[in-house]
Length: 235
Image 1 (spheres, rainbow, N blue to C red):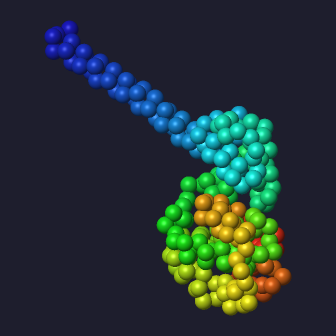
Image 2 (cartoon, rainbow, N blue to C red):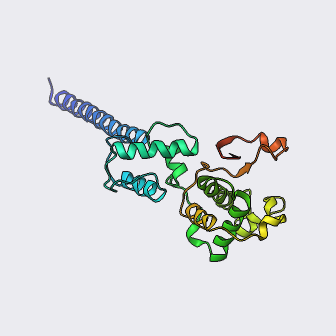
Image 3 (cartoon, one colour):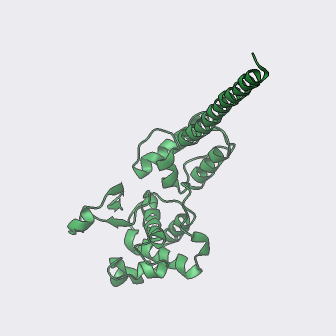
């Protein structure tokens, strides 16, 4: 074999080895990337989970009155039962798992209505609507009305201020009746603050109606997110 052929064969060997090593490394990198994506996609808090997300869930459930245990970041039986109670109260699947839908209803789904930028008059206005529209509803149902107002503020199809949403023509019938001038209840004030703090029992609804009082077929055709008391919440 000539020196030229030997050098050529050695060069081809080096190129082939580099290609094989590159492919192996690329495959390993792809596997690591896929594995991380898969873990992120399927990550949720359930029995046996630990960490900061679990602490956030426990803290939220405690503030809402569903959890009486320690905020220790350990998803045990007490946390699981509290999650089930919360799920049952807002009308979603009761499985004790804090998945995306449950976190959304808790106000931990990662979205923000910009509550920190609201003025005192905005808070009072939300409370007034809750008091007038949902005075006879459960506490969860009252928070839900406040959440709808905030969801509308954040939605591109509605005004981007609380007053703009509340006073939009035909938006809230209570603005035009005697209930609007009644004293705002303390419960409505607390419900307004809970909605501002991120609790959304409606799962992102921007409409609600009472089936016994609403004849609008358009409203009845909207996709329903949940039913709380006498109100149907929808998008």
